[in-house]
Image (cartoon, rainbow, N blue to C red; front, side, top):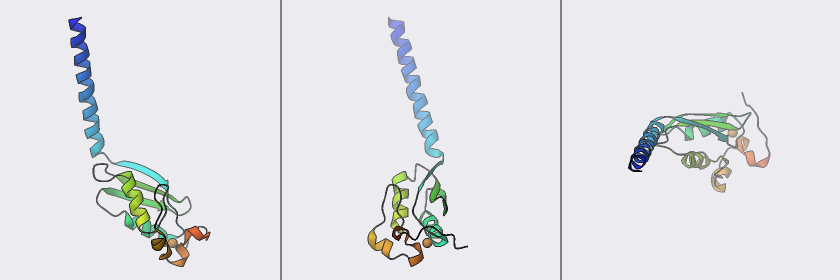
Length: 123
Ligand SMILES: [Cu+2]
């Protein structure tokens, strides 16, 4: 019985140690995620990507056709909700955070995605 206890303590210690190690590892690692962001044109693309030019974000690419934004970031310095908030703060709705009306209304006419202008590539 005693040896069984010793073995189980050994294994639980091992488990704790290995999970701690993997958390450290994940913290340093960059993660990537993709989510939908509303927008219309190349100006929107620049606006969205520039909003994410901050510490903790390695890269951000938004595609007009798919409306998808792919972001690589360091979880130690950045988190998912913050990224959604940054995008919304320049006037673009995301899956999780809606842009404030006054910010949306200040966008150039060609970028007013809520009014059914549809997407267009202005290149
Ligand atoms: Cu636009």
